[in-house]
Image 1: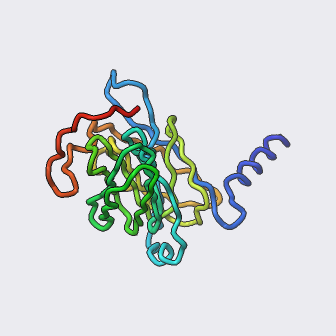
Image 2: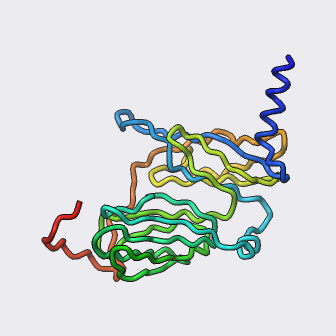
Image 3: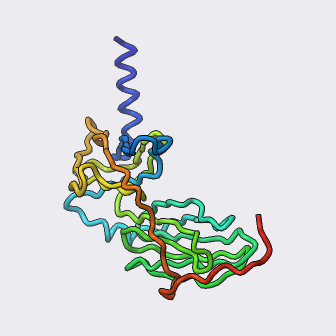
Length: 234
């Protein structure tokens, strides 16, 4: 009995941050069709938006946080990045050729221009939303920056996530995944009240829609030019 009481005290200590905030945990599952391959529940972005409280002034007063998406082997790494509104993301070019990073997302539109190997350019993401990132030279390159307006986390391969420093209060639970939609479809975002006695988000279920980013135009709204034969870089 004594061990059980100590265990309960330890759990509460881990959940309580000591500064009036809590660590909120939960799990998400993505249902896929049979034979669709390994059940990977990673890269689900979960964030909490406090009900009835504006986070815009708080985001404006906070110094911008800095993140990075690398360009290497004609890929963006990581492919999915979640950042709080007001963050700055740098895009270093680690390939031995030119890149041109751009996004046409309304509110976070930018064009970093053409820059060479070893160089880096940055963009600031001021507004919450989903920003699809492309390269104007290589149509196969794509990434997604999920700009959030509340505490957030990204699920691991098992679907588990942990959001730290969440003040007590009532929150709307927002979820985004590149291939998934809510189950049932178009279901309203659930709400959860975080207190010292409740730091767990109810289980989240998503359906794999099988849809990825559709073929896209370049930054001028035109089709990409066919590749020009040249040296092969590995």
